[in-house]
Length: 166
Length: 166
DNA sequence: GTGTATTATCTCAGTAGTAAGATGTTTAAT
DNA sequence: ATTAAACATCTTACTACTGAGATAATACAC
Image 1: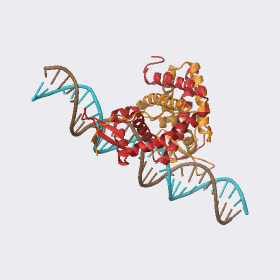
Image 2: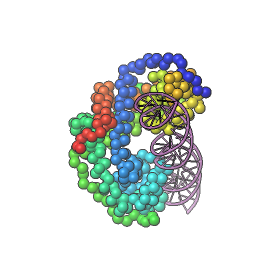
Image 3: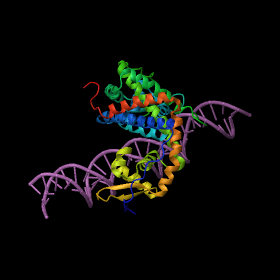
Image 4: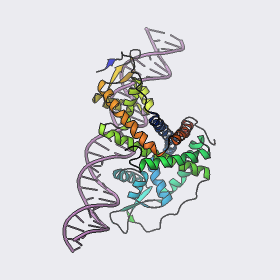
């Protein structure tokens, strides 16, 4: 049922304590900054017919050589079903191929084909440049500062399950 | 075709210049930190049967009162089809309802039902607390520092289309 | 060696979104 | 009034995943 709006808008609720308020503010700017950056990088990949995730796979293989599917999965953080799907797609396009692992017949390597290597070699420098430009709102010193803070934050948030109270 | 891996892994390519290297590093820690945090917040929402996006809608309505669908869309950053889909789902569960706009018959408001308001009032404090704990790897001063840097970064990346070179 | 737990990938069904275009509405210029 | 442009939302078809379970191989304890 769709009625017409009549009552005045609800008033704001009571504010959280200052520690929580600071954390919430950081939460928001973190999300927005990350979104703004990835929007740029992904837009840059569209002309090459790659999504951000696909690019991440090619890049991992480019910089590390052939990797077990599970290693790729852990590196780019998708589900097991997802890595199968993504590598299938890249293989269909001739960018990547599966190789048997000589010592473990359960496992498969993903490796760049010559075509895949050529593509990533062409795309990567532009990608890095887009990131450099996107980050240029901060000076180099500020970038280092931000990197240090975010590294600490990320490790604490990922690892220390029970930080804070508890 | 799936062959067996024989050749040694490919060696690393030439490193980018230092400005680009700093930006790339920041890109990575930013993505990882954001992921670690949202993993925590979303896990906290699961028991309440809410996704992060659904929560974001309820929270926006909770703190701002009824909003036009387009305003919600811009606030939580989904497509127009997405907002229809999401509000449909929340409406089916009786948490939100659509209201006609008295002055513009194209537009619809989304507003919390009593049930939706009760849910978000119950969930929000815990959500804020999870964020406070997740951010506790940084001191309050560091959080403020990080917030300032990320705000600058986000605004520059979102707005200044042509920063850097060009 | 056998059995059990673990690991690696794949399959399948379902979900959350996007993008493009359709529908109906308002605004403004004629 | 009539038309055109700009809007706000919804519909439809599609994509990119996730998660649970299937399959198969390995490792480890006995």
